[in-house]
Length: 581
Ligand SMILES: Cc1ncc(C[n+]2csc(CCOP(=O)(O)OP(=O)(O)O)c2C)c(N)n1
Image 1 (cartoon, rainbow, N blue to C red):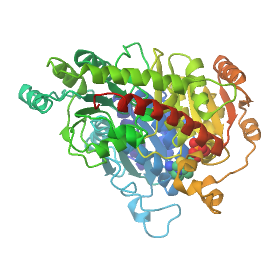
Image 2: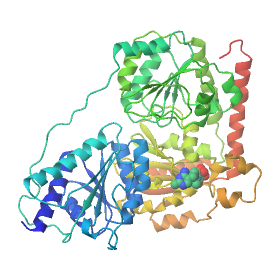
Image 3: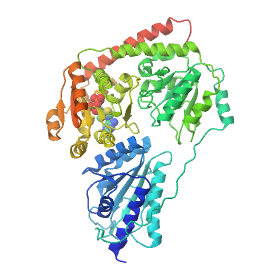
Image 4: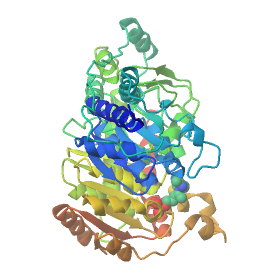
């Protein structure tokens, strides 16, 4: 058998098995060494292929698709630094537990470390971030080696999807000639359809009772739901809250702030409520049960830091140690949250009714303060405008820095069928546009809320919007620099280095950029025009950039004013009461 025939059958069997195992989307960046892979994916004709010339953007695009579909997405690139450009998205996928299959083409062994062009050490190039790295064998088409190729494909998918979901990296040494021969017969081989079944992990009855015992006589509890991606877990938490009459701190990425479920126990204003240390000091908290990752809110983290004596229970659907403040914690590993909620709901835990009623009252007041409208646009109002106009069955993607924090503060619980997503694994401001476009590529019109620095950082992603005519509404908060740093101490003394090192204004004309990418562009000056611009973008589809110009210093005082009002109200409530809460 010729080398070309072996190459063709080996890669074709591998590709065919990826499809059989459930892969539907493949993101390819151009290059020569990856020719056997990219041509075979194209020839197979059943994948949705996406081509992106920038590997950093391609990897974030794949991440966005996998985030929304929760199915593994395949990445293909050539040898050399192409692979290294995948690194940031691989880190994000690792920490946010997103399944990705990374296929890198490489020179064969005889061409490594001998000065061959475009050859770097690709073995374990992504360190410990992938769950599994494997250097594939050189192509061969014996029965055993075709079975091997299929098995690696199947195992890659299984591994990426097994909790915690994550990244698999397969490196392919490939010799020339690199062009497969698709005129050959029977290249795709026999499909392997054996089952992969997963058992559900449920706490035993004695273990549930052990947990309940820890909560005996604890009357002031909170359920917390951080970032997580199971709708059914959200509903189970709501049912548990109803059974116990206990408040829920719902992170914007918990899937709990939107949807048809009851929002009676949802406290979405907890970040604003907990901002003041004086307020936190007056709260006597007994226990927390947390589902999902750590919430976005820094005030929540501070609360935890200060309440070391509480019973703190963290539920991990997979495994992990996501407890950054060092509070003594009961970890429930490999524990299905839905079953746990049902099990716990059958025990009559007595929550202090006043405690729960107060949280609902404080939340209502906090929302009133935060919702207050004015005609002049602010960064908070930009979020409220999106919530008012965004259509059902679409996604809001919040960039890091202030956008996700503003969404935490100003995205109130509602009945809308809208999903809120963000890259909170590593909190990078890189690849944001491409991640949002990856979500949009799953047929969901996506609204991206982003600051100007993150926008310019990930600008290359816009090529995907242009080339694939994807539906993306970008709300670009342009405060000409990194607004988040204005909340830091170094901003206060107006140090002479501040603008150079933190403010970093770039003075870019966004309208000209929009034109380069064929995007519709609007720059509303007030609330009414802003809402209209958003509505127009949803009706029109395609790529729209809505630029909202704000001022970094004014933004800080606007936020501070709201927090002060809320603090004064709460101190009055808590200090005026005979009960210590
Ligand atoms: C890849 C990466 N580089 C740097 C940072 C540090 N960083 C956090 S926020 C920020 C500024 C973001 O500015 P912008 O996107 O305009 O949002 P704003 O702060 O104005 O809300 C930077 C540089 C980061 N998180 N990720």
